[in-house]
Length: 201
Image (cartoon, rainbow, N blue to C red; front, side, top):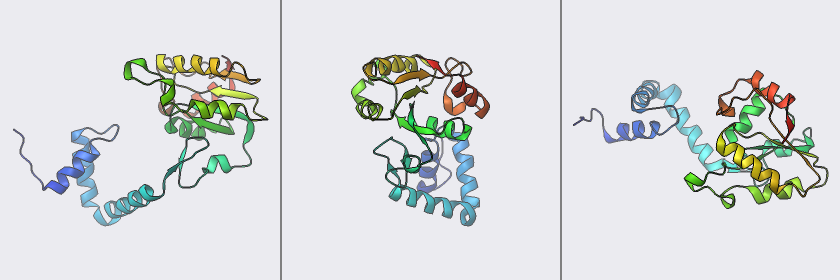
């Protein structure tokens, strides 16, 4: 049986860090020790930043992005092309596309993809709002920037059927996004090429 080598507060910190993506128990212990060693320059500012973020972060009621303002910074940006709506699975995908600088449009975050095995059905996604936004005057194209996974492509087909009655062009990302790949892990060049070479879905 493993022995605890630190107090419950430190053990709790390690356990919470271990829940973060990419951090297992060993990495979480190293991260916790680093935070403790750099208490004044890292742990205290991080603690303050997390408290403020927890108090101020909201989900944009228009697009589903996370920000500290409502509507979010992207929705308020008057320089964005209002005729194009880019549909993404998660906020991390939105951020990945923004890093690439490949598109200057508005976004719509679904909050997931259809996944019968995981019990994710259409009513669990932000689809009603998507149809309403795609119906707005001036919207001419909906880009389905979904992950190239089975669930992502199933969701893309479902959305295409949902929007079939609207006078909008529905496109998808072109080659460059590998099958089974996720947008958040791709480099900016690949994402730029995929946006430039998008095709009708």
